[in-house]
Image (cartoon, rainbow, N blue to C red; front, top):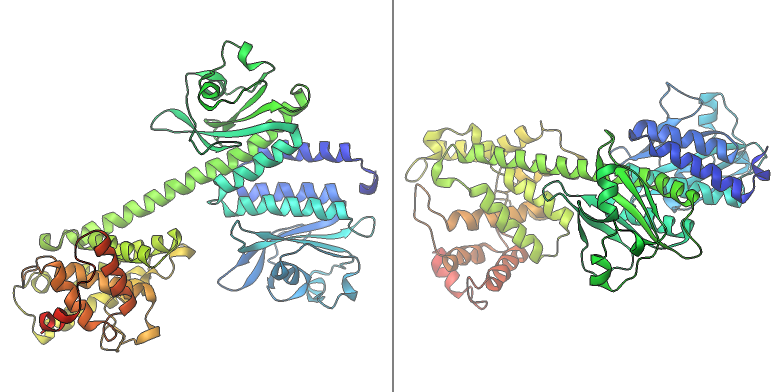
Length: 519
């Protein structure tokens, strides 16, 4: 039976079967292969390819490509119909590839294949970032239809959520619940995640909420019973079921009538949460509705587990950073906590300047590691009381380049790849008088300019072997005196605003005294 003859009901059944099969697979590599194979069969295409975008090389790399197993397929982003569709961020349907001005026949020549019809849907992140593209080749009936375009766009959106992994919830979960609500015809959908520490079920998405968080006792109610037993439940009349916990209804004023409740299970089969559908709009929830929810639950479970793994990795990464910083502190008890203090000050400045949470995260990592090169500095120099001579000062200055040398050997993920440069540039000055490279003005990463101010302010307001600490106003006077030459004036101003808001200093504390204090 050709795809053109498949009824809407049969198409839905086929999609549901795909969801059921996909739900049991948690490995992203095998998951992509399964989805691609099923989509190819459902749409009546000859083969399909999943491209992922490599930001480092600006190329599309085939993550999965039917018909060319064992061969790498790499396409420049700005070449061909695939690249054009992705750059335009729109589904592209071409019935005769060789008549399209955007088609690149070079790939056909390499693979010994003849492309006729072609359908491409971009993979975009939740923030609009390009992640890749989904390509289908050679429709058996000659041309991909409008229905094929819609299904391909849905498949691309789902693959994009899997590719993002860390973006999985709440954004990815919310999309699944909205799709569930439309498919099953329920009033509300809720996703609960099991909190390991408290043993409670916390809602990460709840339709129709009033802004109040929902947290349930694992030992009470239908959701708790579902999580504990790992078995799905279909409740036609909630208030007549003795297992139903009415406390949420009584607190919110909402009336639960019928319910579907399905466990979310990890790759190992452990319960990680619950997804539930509430109040069928017409009639009662059916066994088909339960089957649909179970299929959605598998997809949501992938999102939840990926997010949990991502959060664990983030915690592990940041705890290792703290250990590295502590190893520097251990060299000199007097400066213990310096890296952490610089991090706190830098984040306060970044917040004043309107940095995003992701930018603040990068800034924190660079701040914690900015002095790591001091691990290679002699204790005699680090702990010397009094001024350093020229040779000793040159040795001390080498810690900046040492930081970069050491940090470049760490495999940072893409979001942290600029950490070595940012950290190593915290002694650069706007006028080029800094080190290790003598960078000027715009040559210096802006985050490094923040670290410079934070580092100097922390050092001035703390005891050192060669002097006693200054008060806040004296330290700010020195920063004011160097603003525009050594320090970025916008960064100094942001630090002053933060301290004023914290009531550490009067907001109008001026630069008049700065000149005399800087002496």
